[in-house]
Image (cartoon, rainbow, N blue to C red):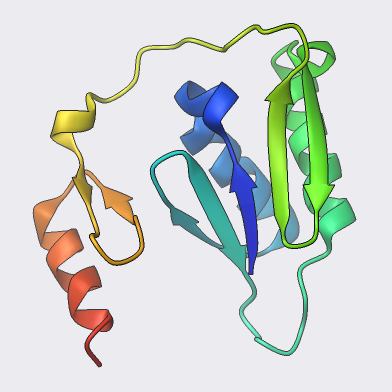
Length: 122
């Protein structure tokens, strides 16, 4: 499992998650200021270099590549602002989101959270 920290680009985190997950063929899990990627087969590791290049490709496509650094450290990738710039777009209010108390999984739907929470007790 690979964790991508998106504190500096929180407003485009969802778009980035979809883009990267499609590129690397991984299962994404959305969390509050980050997302994780895991493979369909636990024996096959995620190609970190492919994830990094996909993130850079996405940032370049929205003309933000020069403002952010993509840094890898073991199983964690951080997207950090070089110039202090933060991408701001209209996002869903945090109060409209439901969060798992066990792992930080975030969803807009209470029913989806309830189903997710049951998985922790299997």
